[in-house]
Image (cartoon, rainbow, N blue to C red; front, top):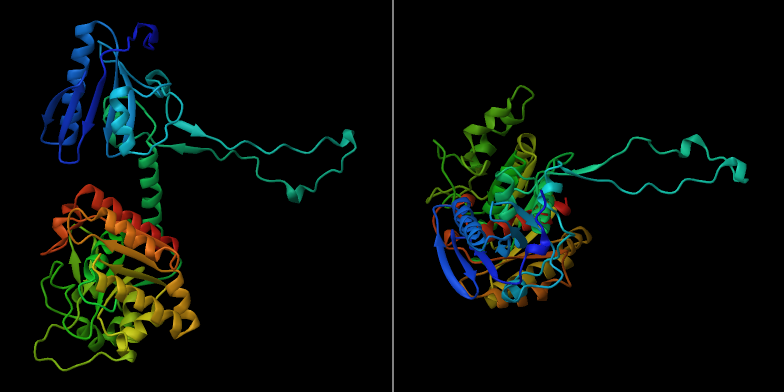
Length: 444
């Protein structure tokens, strides 16, 4: 039963803020009440319980402006716990500072009663048909007729934010614009291409975040699409092996070269590659390490890069190649020859930014094909430390006129050192890497 809007008075003014660290604030008529819970669902339930209690005390519905990482929602809560989502004609005074922080648009009012009717179905309007033959028009050929089958697009209910919490209680509210955008990026990161695709991650300067970029992009693609290998294409000991899980062996790219004939033979099985790569148990991708022999002297040639690429192309759909800093070396140049998509990572430090620019300029001058890769590149700007959001955006704007896309990744302490595990990252960081993976997928 819908809530009688005529019963709602302007006061009290209530707003709820839900933070990513499972803390929150419920503000009632200017008085702040802090909350903390073991997880975000418990936090939302505690806040909602307090709001219902406030409505019960007043014996009438109350309005609540709720903000979390999915955006701003406007709710009406009754003393019995009935909830409606609405689009207010005026913004509540107490919510003005919240709305300034999140630029979001809202659709027309969606009531709980309407949401309970089922999943929203969106249909495109059918084009107007031709006039009848009796009107003097020419009959159209049957070959021009489009299918008569309707193709509605269904939207699954929200799973995130306050809407997701309400849906867990039995409602069926539509997802926010932020959640819909995230679903689009997930679909892109999950896409299966016809044939293997190779992504080269390059910057001529060390310390430009190449290895974390490879690991995090591989994790996004691995978790969503599978069949992904991160290949450390370094002439000497690369850091990808240090920052990822090691399997029950110590084999590297040199071992793959030595066993290439067997791995490429018609009788080879898909599991044979497991003896040479290192599986990432939670992030669902494999790592092909570079040689870590401290007294080794073998230098991978361009022809051996070709052999390695043939092997991994047989066993994986998506290849992400980490790289060294010498853009004149044989394995670096041949990596570019195999690349379908270029990713250029950088931090906010001036020398890393300049090196990223020089990398793009060098590729633009090298050949027509590499110039195309440079123009279609995705630049990833990773914040080196807290409080660099403005500097990151300024850095990103410098690159936007020259490449296809630029994505900013916020600082995250989980990326500073040790093994990189995607699930250990903060939610805004994971969202940024998903956005970067979607940007890369658009170029494939």
